[in-house]
Image 1 (cartoon, rainbow, N blue to C red):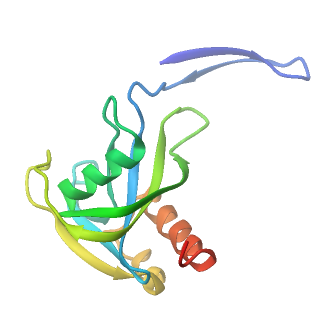
Image 2 (image 1 turned 60 degrees about the horizontal axis):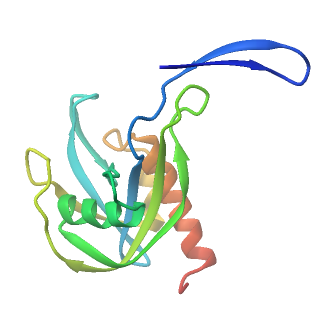
Length: 164
């Protein structure tokens, strides 16, 4: 917990408390099987006490770049590597009181490769068509905000730069 004592331009003073990111951030990966199909993973979500569909995601380890972390997590969670990885933007969880950022990475030109991960069981990989996002966001087992935002951002990126 970090305390901030701030004075605003209008003279008002406030004390804020925020959760300061202790790590190196995280990645959320949008792995594209092709320009129309994303790969989701189904994994146990302890916070919700149920299985959830979502994107490949994880922490950036010390000494890793966001792209290296994205490739590693993709291999650990989905059994794929990517020849083309790009950071699209940073996403925040609750910027009014947390400093945590997740780097949104799009992964294309996939190939099979699996690394051992820290998940207690192998994750199910579920292909999903990007033009069916309206159906996906209504599913009860797809509720994580970063995954929802990331898919819409990636879909828009593909529309404006399909062969970038």
